[in-house]
Length: 194
Image (spheres, rainbow, N blue to C red):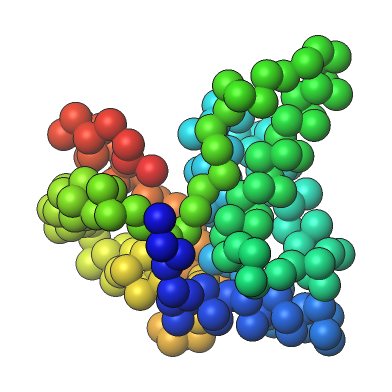
């Protein structure tokens, strides 16, 4: 299978990691945190982690990003793939430690690759159609923020700066909207509403 060329987003994310590695850039870290934290939590919950464990593992993963940014190699993987791998491994470590038993790593989902696979594109388009229809049910202030966050892939900090809203308001409106979307999609029978 041919490798996917890096997207602008992948290049931007790799540059943010480089800024952390080179200068301990807190703004770069905040941008990465805003982008990846909710995605990591959703990924971990899909693997079966309880919300509290998903939050703990996400925090550990982001701490690892801060401490080990200099070990990231964009030639080997995308930032997302690297972080998902760290999160998956930390979840396995915590399960082993907390339960005192071995975890069969073959029973867990593989790390997520940010690049869409060709056979997933049709399914993705169909899912996006369901999501767009569900979005029409959102209040306008939530819909606008969801569009910025998920379709334009802006960080929460970028959205707050662009809209003039406090960061906490942006986060809570997106969280509320995501809950509404999930309930709407589940009601429509869409299996993967994450």
